[in-house]
Image (cartoon, one colour):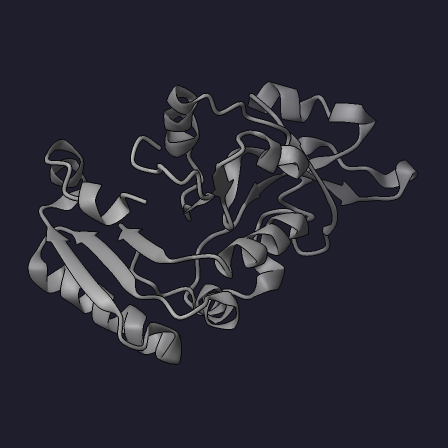
Length: 218
């Protein structure tokens, strides 16, 4: 935020379910919202969690006379039909109390390389908002991501402009270069003339030594 002098939107995409990034954003006056209102949390910082979140739950379709108890949901997993209604739950006990008198299911998805849009565990409105922001992207910073989700790569290819600057943070030069080369290969023409930046040493060194300051300054 301190480097963003032009107040451009900052698009943050994490494939983790945890709340580490969510809580880190609190220091920047980020106000967490219900899933469908998430992008009201901050005027600049926009957080996307395509694989879901440990504090999200999703309502499921069941006949009122045949609504299973929480302990039976696993047995019904192959027949569950999900709605597009998401809520935030702070504990297992809260989820088990069936908010609004309806059945909810944890909103997380196991990552697969060939993941499709249908298995992303986030509201559809998040993907729409993400596509709109991708068209404005000028720089991409990759931390701890191997660029292996096929459908997300397709989303980038379909919506990114031509990207000129990509930085990869990884444990070594070799691993960073491997990720960068693979990512450029996957997004194809959208990376024409790209300037690649490799930052070995991992995330801690990247933060402590402010290795990304010049790259992120806008």
